[in-house]
Length: 185
Image (cartoon, rainbow, N blue to C red; front, side):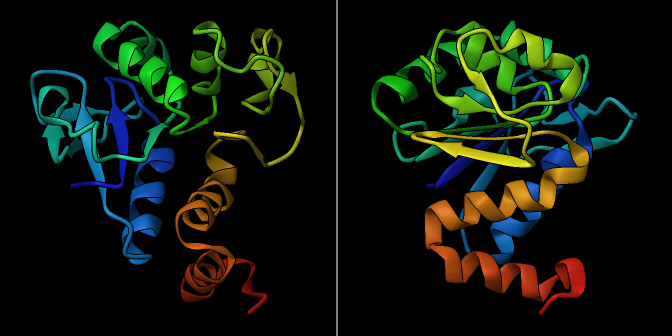
């Protein structure tokens, strides 16, 4: 039973996906990489093929506490086009379960009408697509059930915010120390 589910669509941004998975697993937070296709192997926007843990049909949404969406083009539009996933995202929002997204992917929650004035961030060229959210130009924005981030360069901070949500500030600081993030530790 995974605590978090991260979704791989053809054309996902591999740094945004793999960094999150890595830091959560280092923090002993269970996360499943979920392919939205019928194949476990999913190719990223930069032609890196990763083998997911499970396919969407096998994802345990009942046990999961968070959905995480990496960005990437065409990964983000491919995630949005997956009705089985967007239906589950809406269920998570209704149940006040956590929703996280990075890069272009925060626009998915906006297109589904979920922000309702909450603060969010995304890749700068997609900021105008956040019509239901209050756009904030920060590396990571946490507001209510949402954690959003700007792009590949903010992925470590994004992953740390997710770790903090699950396990607290000390756990987030500990994982950043382990990877010598910003060498401030």
